[in-house]
Image 1 (tube, rainbow, N blue to C red):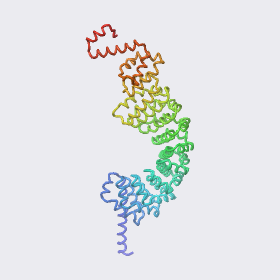
Image 2: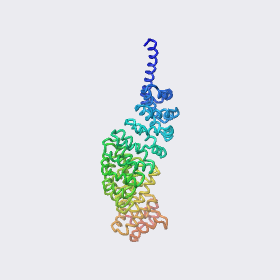
Image 3: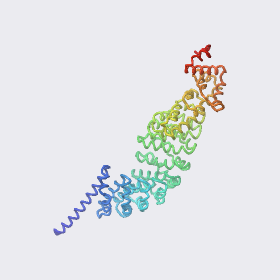
Image 4: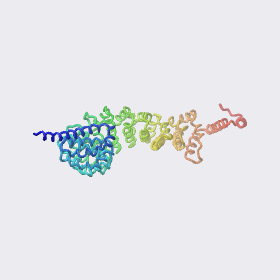
Amino acid sequence: MTMSQRQVLQVFETYQKARTQFVQMVAELATRPQNIETLQNAGVMSLLRPLLLDAVPTIQQTAALALGRLANYNDDLAEAVVKGDILPQLVYSLAEQNRFYKKAAAFVLRAVAKHSPELAQAVVDCGALDALVISLEEFDPGVKEAAAWALGNIARHNGKLSQAVVDAGVVPLLVLCIQEPEIALKRVAASALSDIAKHSPELAQTVVDTGAIAHLAQVILNPDAKLKRQVFSALSQIAKHTVDVAEMVVEAEIFPAALACLKDPDEYVRKNVTTLIREITKHTPELSQIIVNVGGVAAVVDYLGDSKGNVRLPGIMMLGYVAAHSENLAMAVIVSKGVPQLAICLEEEQEDHIKAATAWAFGQIGRHTPEHARAVAVVNVFPKLLNLYLDTKSSEDLQVKAKKALKSILQKCTYLPALEPLLYEAPSNILKHVICQFSKVLPHDSKARRLFVTSGGLKKVQEIKAEPGSAIQEYINAINSCYPEEIVRFMHIYLTYKYLQKQHHTKILLKEYSGFNTS
């Protein structure tokens, strides 16, 4: 080789090294958020695009990796990838290039699709689905994983996109991926199935029809926490839609084995198991009874005791759903010590939506019979529910649920010690339910009648200003009729005396009540 030939080749080698160094540095810089804006302002997108077609494979792959990292950062950069007409190039390369490039190209598609339905639709419109399906059939597990992840990010946004993914023939291939030995591939496949199934009963049924439930059920006790998260999420998204698919999940014999995962060290495994149980129990009394029979209610009560914050929400709702179905199921929640644990949640939690769910659950437990209402009353939640209802800082949903729960429990409650404090604090719309319960119990309970006088309850009832002929006045009359007329008259005289004394009407007092013993 002559000197001049070497000089010419050295120019190309230098250029290749410079391109290599450039894409490597950009890919490295793109891993740090503080660099993103500077890279964007420097026009990095337009510089990376031609490098996707570079003659050197490693430069192509690294350019795709850099683009993926940039697009992953925010929707503006993802939008720039779409507007730069880069997607068709990537889709074409998915079918043509080696496995390293395929992984990088799928990463870009996944990064663009994750941000919004519009960007995911742009990925679909450029023909990516067929190319990603072919990648799912690749031998290399890394390529399959990258393709499954991109498909999940497309499907997650809405039913239309999810249906497009299903129509491309993805679901059976994802089920096959769950059966592969690689844990990372199993995770991403389970996550993609979850993203497809969540939107509608029809999409969930499509997942079920491929035999997904049985294969998901086989890996629920896998030691990998991230895999268990995705598996329980997928089973939840399937079970939530209809009674039929929920029954199929239960028939896969995941219980009681799944309950062991309520003690898993991973917080999100525990949350997703509880969510699955909630989605099953909400459908029918029969499904709830199955969960009760395997010890599911007691296990969820323990879970609530071990948890804090938002991860408690599915457990709280699950107890409410079980209790809502029937008296017996509500009693199962009571026997499993669900009521004291819900009272702790109501006391500890700060978020209004969690308090609202807890109030709702109390209402579902206490609304059945006096026995159920007493179980709620004895943990002293009435004042708390009343405060949440009256507190102007409470969200509208919390106020509504606290009020509804309080009314539904009060209408069954005959445990007077819990009702009496409400005589002094409740507004008229709640007070009428409290007075009503006293009017039902006092005529038949002599001990309660005596205590009602000595505690000051009867005196308090006389202070209530009720419209003549109103329901609350009828209840007051019913209470007064339980006592000798002179006791009621004594209360009225005593209250008038106290009122006048408070107003300092000394002359009237001396004249009208000179012989009255006020002791």
